[in-house]
Image (cartoon, rainbow, N blue to C red):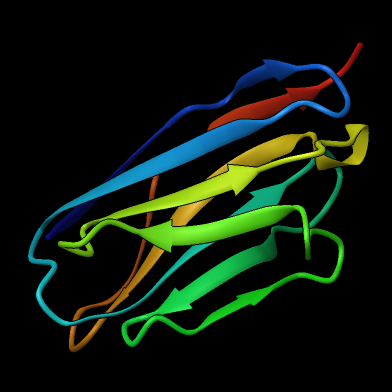
Length: 116
């Protein structure tokens, strides 16, 4: 089994920054990709950013140049640095891991609210 535990959400004013963290534990050998998704009320869950096992990254157009995804050296923690936050970034943010031979796992989600 794989466990993903997110932290770092909260309330921030427009233009502010937050850093989300997601710690992976359990059978995490063979991580193919780590990603962040988000889901706002009434909307479908959408991909925000993804980092592959070889370090390649990709971002949703709406967050490019504002958000940065990265992992630690052990590649068992994934971060999402969010700068210049906008009210439309308000959502529950979910960590996601794609593990070789095991499938996809999700964290419990962390709320990010951007409001003045």
